[in-house]
Length: 180
Image (tube, rainbow, N blue to C red):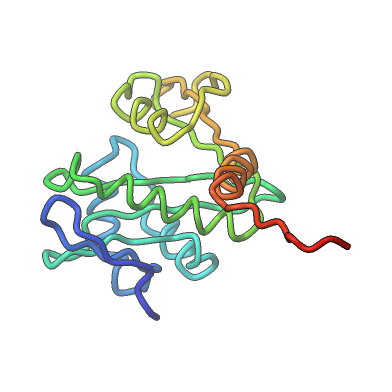
């Protein structure tokens, strides 16, 4: 499978690509490192098999440095998990993963993307806000330890409309000088 894109993020050469089975061990390591209640490995195995197009991985020369996993519902997507190795955080990897997964979902006709984040995780909430996600509610006792979650949502249709409108504004209008 061909890589989705290559970009340099603060001197890091990162390739974003679809998940492959040989990546799962490192993905599970990142998951355990990142979350107090990580998903069990079989979840990643099933998602890699069932929906590899919405399971993206960030790879550098050092190996797998992050991943994002989303699921599809009728007309909306759901970011199930995103994580980046500690030593690669705040270097643009998470933002690149999110930009790529949002583009994948947009191309699939997804209108809205939802995700949940711990109420105590202010860094993540700020990260998602910068990406255009807005608070859309509170889910009581969402996590296994009883912590609440903030549901956040991003409307992709509105974003498409704004982008299309901005592109149209830049196009010069050519009028025919011939009289009919």
